[in-house]
Image (tube, rainbow, N blue to C red; front, side, top):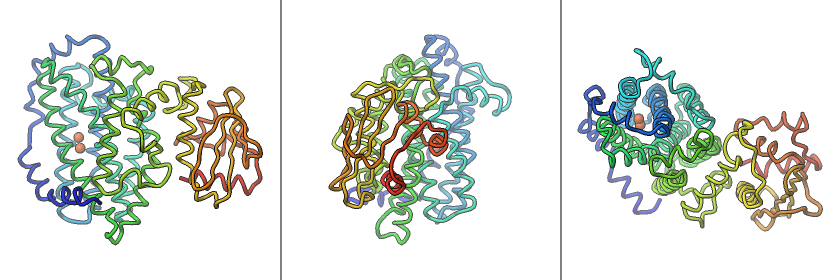
Length: 430
Ligand SMILES: [Fe+2]
Ligand SMILES: [Fe+2]
């Protein structure tokens, strides 16, 4: 950890975080929504549809985080952390109630029970969102059975860094900005201001906990780092797809004055900053965790991610978009694949992997001298050749895919010796 970030974390104590909670208490029932009804009616049709999409993610999310935090209180290694987490659980309940009221009183959907109102959010939740929140549900069950420090570090990573830090915060940032500048939804703006202050405290707690647990001098530091890496690899394929708008329609963000690229760049910047503060920068993580070129700016990376999302390369393989065969997008995809490869698993010998697509240009990967590079075209003597359609290949790499089944029903056809196929699995184990 750098000296500066270490100081930053040492300056914030768990006691400070608790005190800030006492001082920042607010009431979800005292928010006055009376002027917001007219504000809502004054929005355009696309703005209302977009708001339903974004706020459904918030409302469902607040409900899930409220329900899943209890095992964290029990698993926390110190009373100070445990007490803070108990205050956080109260916050999440308050956030959920704030959205329940907003849905009922301003949007005019939902019913008398929280469950009824939550039901109205379900059609809005996409593949990326469900991937992350289903994992959060399972994490709570795992943490009930396993209260070890590595499991706790994994759970904090998912909850505080991913859900709160890289999904909720970028969403909040842009929504808050829009309504604050318009002043047409005063109740909503006041409530969201409170929610985002609470969330900053929660994220600060998560960063502090991880900066302690992942420190090289911590007795469980190495195990905690390994557990965090495992979790990140599991869920990071879902996270960019959370902000994939319905029908891939850019109007969902642009009607509020920001682009998809703005959200992605803002999120990436936060991710890079936070892991640096924790003392485990993304550049120091093993290959395949953050498969981005470290030399590129957040703006460049965001633009590339959005292009790959709109081109059907990132995101779900549900057949809703035919993956683009644009050479530039295929290049971005294979460069990402090259960064996921672990050259150490190649045992120092040059290795070539070939992809032959029945409906797109061939590509190959050369792993040698401790690095991997992607090149278009056909290579001579590849160790393994993979034949598939472009869409099937992409589908086989999604986190919820069953690649073995795809091999068995011949949608993916790997050709090579048993030894080389086993090695391929090691190269891409990360
Ligand atoms: Fe919250
Ligand atoms: Fe929170």
